[in-house]
Image (cartoon, rainbow, N blue to C red):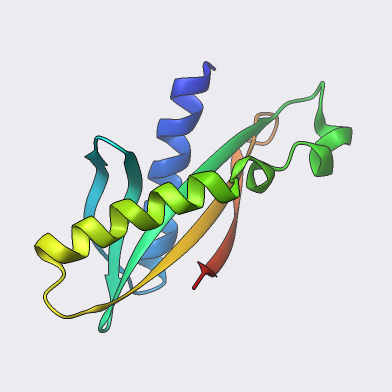
Length: 125
């Protein structure tokens, strides 16, 4: 599986994860010249701007799973870009809702064909 395919699959799994937890998906891959938001979702009066990072755990690297952490790839700089893009989104489409920036790490196990999500809410204020 190629890196781009892993990312697309990770986003799809993250969307299913959010739906099961009562979120309404509003938009995917919202782009501005300075950044992109993988998933925009709403729950109640809060808009959630979700950065998704996925990693494929294969037989070769299964023993190193904790060193192959997708959440490590979410840098402060990336979160600042997400926040700037989210602010732009809210200014144009926010309808008075509150907002927060979240991250979902998706572990794709190549051997078992299963996925595990780790959801971190409101990662920056």
